[in-house]
Length: 244
Length: 34
Image (cartoon, rainbow over all chains, first blue to last red; front, top):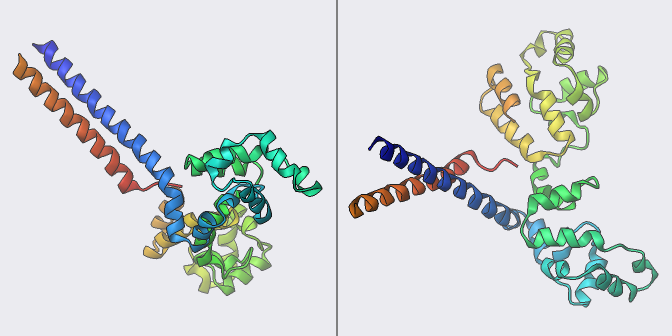
């Protein structure tokens, strides 16, 4: 009887775990499929990109190339993914020297991922060559909150105003990257040296914020700053810095 | 015996559903980290 109870418990546990795993799996699939559509809903740019510039999320395909492909019956990602490299080469050959030198091979994998809704994988693939075109499109709107800040404007960091910016600039910290690599103790020293007025500044999160700005992670920067605005105790700032 | 199996399968299904629910709700609460 004991054995039977044990067996029952194990079975219950197993079915619970099965449910858990299945839910996670379904959720992940739904998320990656919905990501493009959700992005489209919140962003006019992306909406336009998906509706009209359909193929242009692929690295290497611009407006002209898209027009060429459209003329030859390639309108959607899946249609592009279904073509082979020689077929695409044949299409390009028809349009003269400028197009003949283009290598369409990298498009196929990207188109396959786009058609399958694997947004993260596509961004990862594009990032191998540097910046991801799709990621830029997806997060264009998220930067808009920060668009008023030019590159390396330290005021983008919550807690830094014009005066502290001047202090940091004078101390040789002039870029987001420089601030992200600065030591907390060094920044505290700069603030201390500037007088009692700056004692209230809480620089614990500045390096992290600068790092996020420098790497263009606008969404996380916004999350971080929202948390900072909620409460300004040093402890929370530290926790935020660790959590983000 | 049949009754026992019936009861066991109902419990199994319940556990499975609970797992599903937990899986979905944990993601919904934590949100997808990008």
